[in-house]
Image (cartoon, rainbow over all chains, first blue to last red; front, side):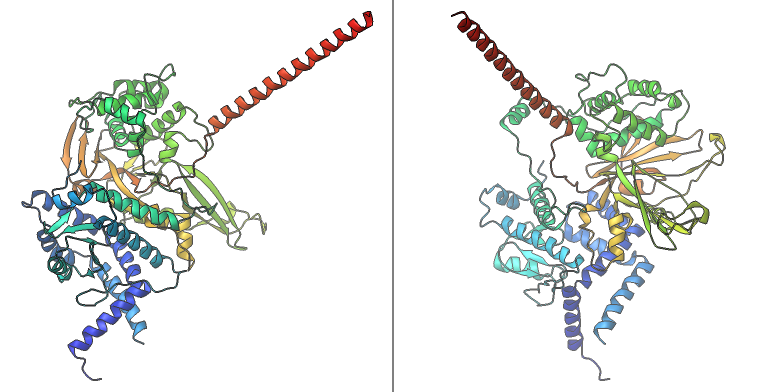
Length: 98
Length: 534
C-alpha cells in the first residue's frame, strides 16, 4: 500500500465528514454520545463547573470560559463512553471504506 | 427583565420592521435546524440531510455558524466565521444548534429575552407541523401567544407591584420538616405556582365551609409571594391535614411521601368539578400520567394490555448501579410471571408462561419520583431499615426509552417517537432525608429560575446544582420542558349548562304554544255558543 500524503488524508477526512453528515449518521451518533454523557453525570458536572466559574469571572468572556473548560471536558470524559463512541464511528467508517 | 448588555442587539430588536432585519434570518435559521433534526430522526424520509459547507475552507459543517446578514456559513473553531464578520462588516452570526447570537462589536455572545422568545416560537411552530397525536393522528394544537385584552391591560396597570422573593423559609412546628419539604416542592412547582398565583382558587371566595386544602394552598402561595422575609409557619395547613388524615396527626415525624400523596388527594377532592374518572383538577392536570401493563402469553404471543392511572413513580433500589436511568430500566423491563399467575384468554390452555412489562403510556407535566429507601420487613414501621446509598439523578431527564411509544419505536425500524421536546424534563426540586427512620430530618433543594437553593425549615441559602445533585435524594421532581396542548374542547359543565338553557327555552316555547292553542279553543267555543244563541 502506497503511503498516504497528509493532503490526501485531509481530503479523505473531509469526504467522510460529509458522508456522515448527509446520511444523518453524525447526528445519530452524537445523540447517543449526548445521552451517555448525561447518564454518566458528566454533562451536569461540566454545566455546574462552567456556571460557577462564570459567576466569579471578571470580565465575563465566552472565549476565556471555552478555553478553560475545553481541556478539562476532554479529559474528564468517561473512558467507557469514549470507547463505545469510537467503536460506533469505526463501524460506520469500515462499512464506508469496504 | 432584559439583562442584555449589548446595545447592538437591543437596537435591532427595537426596530419594528423585521423585513431586512437579522432577526428574520435568525427565524429561518432556527426553523431550518429543527427540520434538519427531524429529518435525521425520521428515516422514512430517505433523502440526503443537507450539510452546508464553510464559506472559507469548504469543509462540511457539523456545527454551522451562520451570518445573519448574508448567506455565509462557517466554522467557529478555526475563526472563519468571526473573520468573515470583521471583513464584511457584518454584525451578527448565530450558532445554528443552540440559537445563540454572537455580536462582532462586543466580541461575545449576547442575550436578549426577545431572542429567546423568537427561538422558542420558531422551534415550536416547526415541531407542530411534524408531530401528530398518537390516537387521532391530528396535528398538535398550535401554540398561541397571549395578548392582553384592554381589560387585562387596565387590570395590570391598576395593580400594585410588591417586592417579593418567592423564596421563603417555613417554620418547623415540631417535627414538621416532612411537611415543609413537600410544601416547598409545591411552591416551586411551575404548574401549581401558576394555578394559585393565577387566582384559580381564591380562598376569600371559596364556598367550602371548613378545611379546604385548596384554600390552604392559596394562603401558602400568598404568604410565600408576599414582601415578608421572615419564615412562615403553616399552622392552619398542619391542623387541616390532621383533621383530614388522622394517620398523619400527632407530633411524631411522618413520612414525606405519605404526606405528599395524602395532600394531593385532599387538593383533588377540594377542587371544583373534580371527578373520579378523567379528572381535570389541577392535581391531575399536573401529576397524572398513565402506566401501561402488557402481558404477553409465551405460547401464542397474545398481548393483553391494561392502563392504570399514576400520580408518581416509586423506584426500588437494588444492587450498586443506582441511577434513575438504571432504576427506570428495571421498572420497565419484562418480568416473567409464574405459570400459576396467568391463563391466556386466547389460547386458554390453563396456566401459561407469560411475561409482563410496564411502560409509561402518558407522561405527566410533572414527574415525581420516590426512591424506596425505607425497607419494611414487616408491617411494623419501626422494624424498617434505611438504604442510605447515593443515587445519581440528572438535571435533564429524557423519558423516551421508558414510554410505550418510545419503546415501540426503538423496536421498529422506521418509527419516529416524536421530538425530544415531548420527552425532556428539567429537575426543579429534590427532597432529602438524613438520619434514621424515626429520628431523621428532612431538607430540600429547589430551583428558582436558574439558581438552586437549599431549604432547611426556616433557613434558605443559595446553593449550586452540584450540591443538589450530590445530595442523597429521597424524592425528585421534574417538570416537562414543553407542555402539550389538547385541541380545545368546551368543558362538560359548560356544555351541560348550555344544554339546560336550550331545554328551558324549548319548554317555554312549548308552554306558549299550548297556551295559544287553549286560547284559540276557548275563542271558538265562545263563538259557537254565541252563534247558537242567534
